[in-house]
Length: 277
Image (cartoon, rainbow, N blue to C red):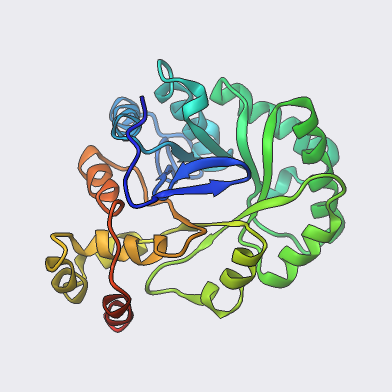
């Protein structure tokens, strides 16, 4: 049974409700190559996050050359699949009609299940490749292998162009780097996606831990009984369509990340927080 956070910390991707904080898996199971040394701890951490009530897991075929997906597949065993929302991504070398279909099937096999949201991981210069890939993904939705289509690291211009290329389904999400320190999405992309009812999934939301050590954020957090990291994450999820995916590195980090939900910075404190970086 999923523990639902209070303060409306369920966001929407497509027609599905997900927690405002998800679990990122870059570096879990390796980076560019597989690393099996921390498998047991990684699976335990992901399972702990699910037990807390975090229902969104973000992975990709590129992470650990697929091993991250295998660990996610192991971690979700025993949980009700319908309560979990899994994101994976196709790497640009697998863009194109046939290659994308093959990559999605391989990801689903490693996960041991269908994929809720499948993203184009990075843009490429050849838009025809992007278009072919999006059309392949639309067919995979019809086949039930994936449920929703999204993109990652697309700027506003490319996002709009990609939307126009869709034949049957909508692009429901764009996963981009967004943090208190790197607020480029606030210069147009965020507002556009809000109007279009698209989820903005924020990766590297804690700037590899540097925001968790920010003394100014820690000082503001004292008023709420929260840590600097929780303040930095709360700043992002304050927006109705933003989901943050900090790395699910350990039980302690997961519990801290979970504590970023269930409350809100005041508008005044949110302005102060911007001045901390």
